[in-house]
Image (cartoon, rainbow, N blue to C red; front, top):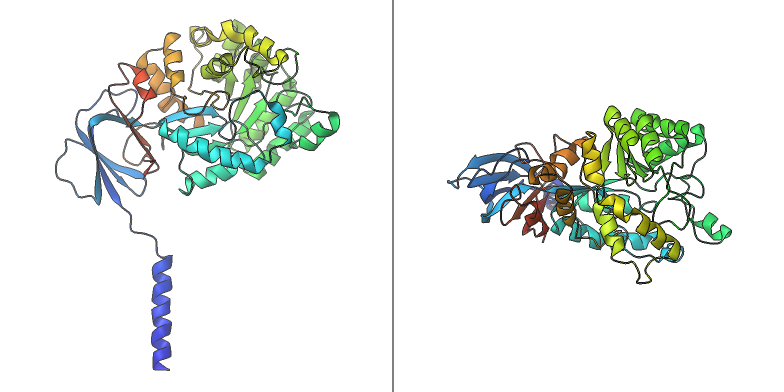
Length: 425
């Protein structure tokens, strides 16, 4: 009996040890210089302490400090991880829309795991996933959160809400195939659209994505104006906001942009045909533009190569001149611009090239960096967690050569990435 009790106590001790949380590790990052946020100047040599995924202090110099291990970035500029507000991790670029009919959703998780790591290594520690299969982005979100998959923090929309036959709905197949591929998030009328928002929330969406206008890459040759009625858009926005969710709207045509802003949509994605009336509506409602300039860059590289159908090629060529002045047009009327790229339409990992494209349209290096850090964090409602380096913030940290406040394009080559306190190898 005595031996049995000893074995029982030993077993209990072992179970207690297994169930106990791991001791929090403290990491000291020795930086050559730190840019704590886009509004601050480089500090010079400093030490960042990280414990259990959170920044605990930033102190000048490299003096003696107690830590479990050190990371030597004395030759680098250290700054907050970047935020991309428009990505599609679960897909790769290409015009072969028919793959939707032959590839299972599960394949999107495999592709997404590859792209999550590539995106993080490019310096992007948080992304907003702007439409995916039913569960693919949600699975990736959990995988990166738990450290099973190396990658960024993911704010996921899941399937986009669309009108029947519009951009975001399944198009280009026989009717019976279209019906089989329907994800169940099309809606018609105020009541049904509100219900679909509630369904998306129930299924785990962090944000509601809608296709408010026609699209460039969908198979219809019709125009790019408003798809939902004003009443439907307002029902979507009001319902989402009542659930504590924001709404992002794919929108190209000017009247569709204006209608979405007036309905209370939070961000306009793309915004290609933005005009004065649409911009003024956005300014009045505080609607933010996410320009996704890299989307056009990526699809333009495929023109004339048989990548896209003739219908899609025609639409790409029509929008090319407009995207070259989009950011300048928006800023002329006081519209806030935040960083997003539409990664997946072009090759993942090139996200930072958007920074240089924004600069070419009149933004300063500091403004561009802010759009991808503090500005993007505000769009997500996470400005007290990410977008800057400060005690209590998530340890989302990158390092580069040079000073991005003097030349933001140095961020196209990132040498070190930490997401939530985990180094991405």
